[in-house]
Structure formats: C-alpha cells, structure tokens
Image (cartoon, rainbow, N blue to C red; front, side, top):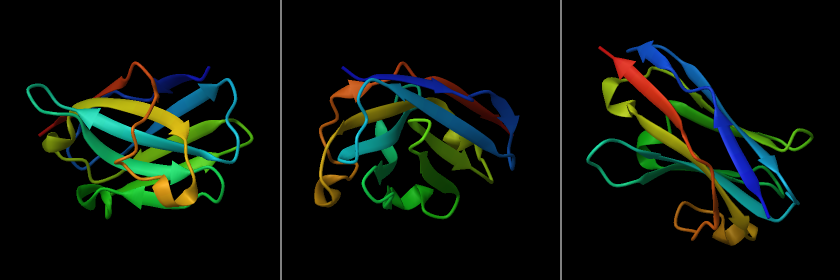
Length: 125
C-alpha cells in the first residue's frame, strides 16, 4: 500500500513561485510512475507532469512545459513540483499520484492507483 501526502500549497500573487512536495510512504521502487494532477473548481482534473522513478525521466503537459519542473528525491521518497511565473489560471487543488509502470507507460494517461488528498494553490492577480 502506498500513501501519498502533498504539501506546499498556499496563496501567492501572480508571477510568484511555489514548490509542492509529495511524500510517499510504503514501497516506492525503481519501477514507479509518480505524477502531479490538478483540478480547479468546476473543471475536470488535468495532468500536470509525471516522472519515472527508474531514471527520473519527466513528462509534461503542454501548458506545464515552460513553467513547471517535476523532480524526484529517491532517498526521501519525495516528488516535487516547482512552479514559476504563476498565473491565476494555475489556481487549483494539486494532487499527487503513483502507480507501477515501466518507462514507456509513465505518462499522464496512466491509470494511477494511488492518490493523495491534495494541496491547494491559489494565485491572485
């Protein structure tokens, strides 16, 4: 069983930066895909970025490519999402997700089994 706990969300002004953390407990090996999703009020959940624990290879949604960075600290079983140049449209609850995968299937389309409860990011103009 994997448990995921997100932290780091808060209110910031447009143009600011944030780093979200996702601490994983339970077994996280070198064949896991870990990802960040977000959901804004009244909108569907959308994938932000994913990373494969085996080699740290990242995968980004197109909107996240230039402003967001996903990274992994395997010694801490923690995945980070660094966000910069935040805009009000980034306001959402951000969720961490994880599942077994191989390098080729670690994308935002993977059917993730494990989810955290999320952390709220609010960007004001």
